[in-house]
Length: 101
Image 1: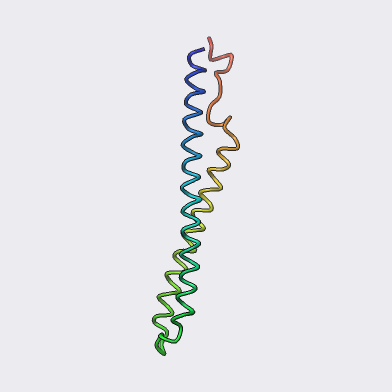
Image 2: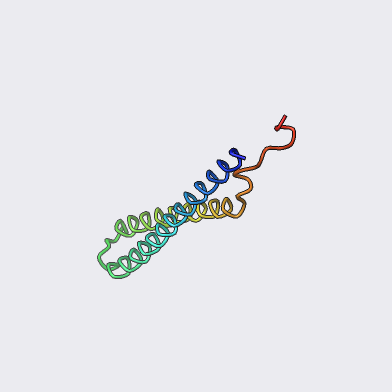
């Protein structure tokens, strides 16, 4: 019975950690989306300041691409953690009858 109680406590601990990490990822995604919006605004407000070779344009595009890729990675991570939350039985299983010996 003690093993089952310890297992349930551990499962609760893991679920709390997953939920906390999901909250962090969601906030990171919101921050990243705001950053992308700010980059778009900056790009259009300062479009005339770019030189004929488009160097400023290239830098902005690279920064925007970097942030979009970071957001995509965060979305994938969030999806994985949500799947883990949806299937907590994979995190803890009770001993099978053959293990009770």
